[in-house]
Length: 323
Ligand SMILES: Nc1nc2c([nH]c(=O)n2[C@@H]2O[C@H](COP(=O)(O)OP(=O)(O)OP(=O)(O)O)[C@@H](O)[C@H]2O)c(=O)[nH]1
Image 1 (tube, rainbow, N blue to C red):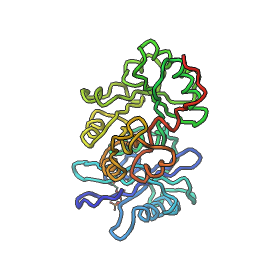
Image 2 (spheres, rainbow, N blue to C red):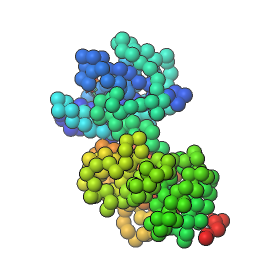
Image 3 (cartoon, rainbow, N blue to C red):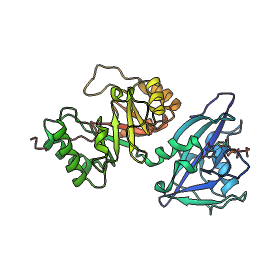
Image 4 (cartoon, rainbow, N blue to C red):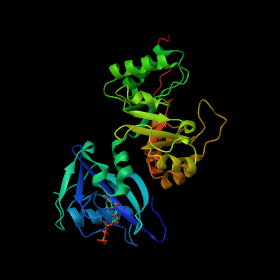
């Protein structure tokens, strides 16, 4: 995730978890973006890795100790403030030690992900907050013969694989059948965040978590189709599409195909190297799509992705009663 651009300040940023809360500090009034909240961190010195820099900054600023080898990449964000261009290299720690306090006198406290408000942080932090709240796996529904099968398979897939975010992508269903699936899945899967696909108007009608748009639908937009507080995702395939998705306020994108898929075994994927290049330049969380599976989650994360999106690993092919 490191960046070598000569005018860009490389900043190591830490998302430190304890008991479902995150360590937050308030930036000193007279510093850059002063008075706003931040995830603790600071500049990477020329002779250190980003993990070493983060461990050093956390100790210097908050008296918290993290082991560099326990850090996991979360997201990398380039942002131009006009007076300063930064590359925020964000890593998370599930384990840390020490009793945090503001060594430099700054207030330090813990907040849950739901308590983070983008407007309290510098502008570059918005996608970091999305990356914190979004899960590592985005489950997408596969082909179905009817709405009954869609409901059964969703319930079964959630029971077996436990995804917490599910995209109801069912282009073969009529609007009536589709809304039946939405209603029934909301009832039967209360702990799952559901995304409707290509039907943003349903977000106002049902308590779903948000909408995911195909590239075709997103391409013609100039802003978000749903209010903040609902997820808005876009299917992307290249750098320009990722840039457009970010520009219209998307919270995340899928990017693919990374590898050949079951449905298109002959179509070549872009491969992990290209995925990493594009994901690391994007300014929003990016899921790897196409040929992915839970065994590849680590690979996706190490490549700068939010995680994996896909069908085959959760969409069960067994024991469903099609209607
Ligand atoms: N640590 C931290 N910096 C952030 C965040 N978001 C964000 O835009 N930044 C920006 O990244 C840069 C980090 O610089 P810093 O001032 O914390 O680093 P440092 O401790 O090495 O700075 P100094 O040597 O200027 O005192 C600042 O321009 C700051 O505005 C964030 O969440 N955490």
